[in-house]
Length: 473
Image 1 (cartoon, one colour):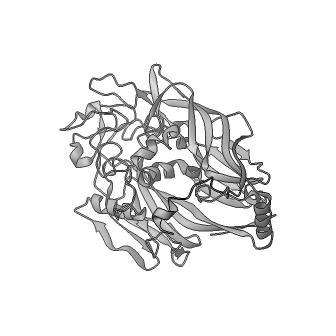
Image 2 (cartoon, one colour; image 1 turned 180 degrees about the vertical axis):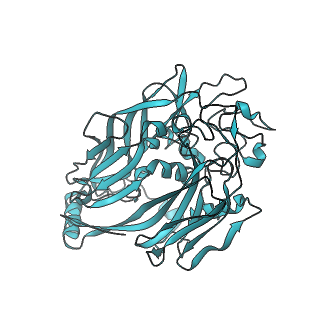
Image 3 (cartoon, rainbow, N blue to C red; image 1 turned 45 degrees about the vertical axis):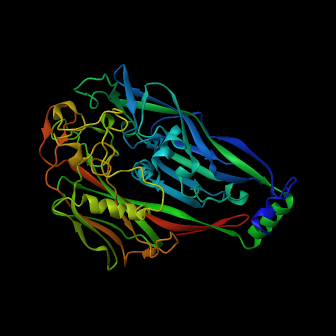
């Protein structure tokens, strides 16, 4: 039939849907209120319904307390409501572990700006308060379910045999890392933004999942039940392995971070260097409760690096460029999330940024700045040289590597084990200036204490049967 002929067809189209009903059901957590360090638990009771996790979300009321009046609190330049989640674990009804992501908040801080574009944060991610500041009052936070775990981002309906009885456990982060106190912008300099107030405590209440449940027609449901009971169905998704090391204040002599656990298909890996508070008011960065503790060290801290998997190097020679391998590193990271070919959506994370993003909207920073007035430490450099807050160059670097054998996002990863471990070898730059813990006027001249975190993404497979699951990685 020609295109014109097809436009001569009239009448009501046939109803070919296999779905009887679709609705939203609330699944509450075990308790109504949780505090830092608590484990919040929710068990799904879905019966015979399938779940569309791409259209579901986690909701809760968040309230932060700071020790100074007339202040706001902030999640950080790339922080969000995900800051409260230290660890998330998902278990099947049988007790088998389907997913475990440790330091989920740090992973979100690193990956959300890389894997989403600007408009996403203004729309789907708006309820997460990404990169935002909130007045000291209770706020509703909504996190899309597919952000919480790759299992929930699978893209297909989760079968009832898997979802019914599924348990989600969320371990809440300590209060000093979730938010920090800030000062309301008054329109004048100096901008005494940080180090002025401690985020002393927070609480989370009215926590629940809103799940979109799908009821299949009887014939389709029975056919699916037959397949699941005899052959089972397979779901392929990603897992994340987290490793870290704290090399102190000396990275110039070299640091190696290795993952040697056994995985069949390692897909990609990402790393970040962060400064640490050393417990003293002298020769240290701000303490966690007074700063964004998930951001990278300001000014790119790495002089050279290379990834190694067994006897393979990624790339084949160390990345270094006069002690500042920033641009080349940025390109490799974009490649790791398939963002460099120019045919996809654009990553939110820029190499440089001309304004302060969430801090002072619309104000363009040009020329040098008085370091005594800027709590995060601009060191008097021009933004065109070091970038501004929220840029890859300034404080949001992510060292990425693609380990797959094919660029079409298939499961063409490489095995990792104790014979062929994955190792990141790097050397730090020379001394970088950081602000002291409790002052905005004195700079430290020695390198700060540092922590190197690495997240390796790998392929997981779960076979779902009527009464049990089989998990492979």
